[in-house]
Length: 143
Image (tube, rainbow, N blue to C red; front, side, top):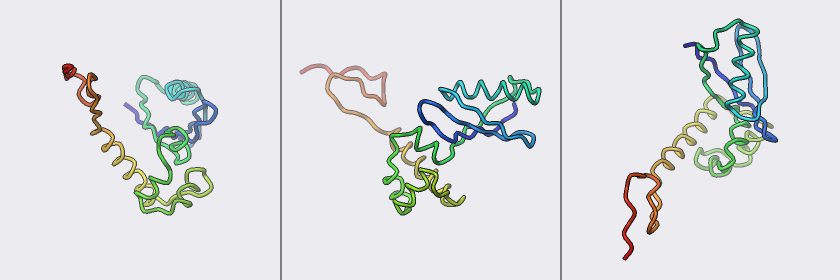
């Protein structure tokens, strides 16, 4: 399997904009979903480089602007605080006005991964409902 980095640059007006580098070529495309973008990119790789698309797998990566545009539930200020980054500077990263260093980008990724792990542990306690974290658990009996 040939793994190629597909960078999501932007998600605006329902369009995913992505880019990849292959064989010194920059390929840019847009689509209405990530799945469709991957299919279009595979077709372009087949057309321009005669690649067997069955052997291509994408490593999805995000430009920081694309990340905050697609994952709107991520609060830029909260991520900044958790990463020890000035909130104003983080907003500039999120809008593409400035770009983080490699170390700073790594810290942002670390914080977002920690948020994901934390969210993965969430359980909602509500009478007469299944717990989200344990869908096999039976409903609580009514008293």
